[in-house]
Image (cartoon, rainbow, N blue to C red; front, top):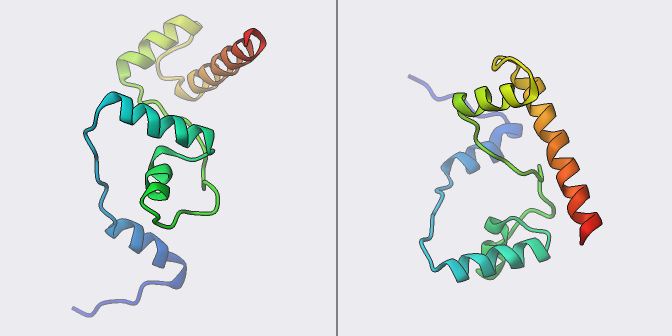
Amino acid sequence: MTQRKIPEKWQSSVRAAKAVQVAFDMDERLQYQIRREALDNGLSPSDQIRHILTLPTAAKPKRPRLTVSLSPEDYAYLAERYGLEPGQQLEIKHRVMDELLAYSRQQLDEG
């Protein structure tokens, strides 16, 4: 079987696929310190660790975002909360986003 050459535009994806994620179990205070520094520096915790280790990082985050994993039970709960059907996942995501925006605005106003 012959190997096909990978197109140039996919080369960075190949490198990323070969990368190995490393997890560190450390004291909560140390984790908090690194996360806090990352936040203060506008970095992800992963990029902050790379910065501490003097490893290269991307110039700016490719997709700065917050994430949460939602189970089918979570969708059912949120659907009931928002008066929707659990299958309306896109609308649920929109409502969650609206709620998070309202929360952050309130926190900014109070702070």
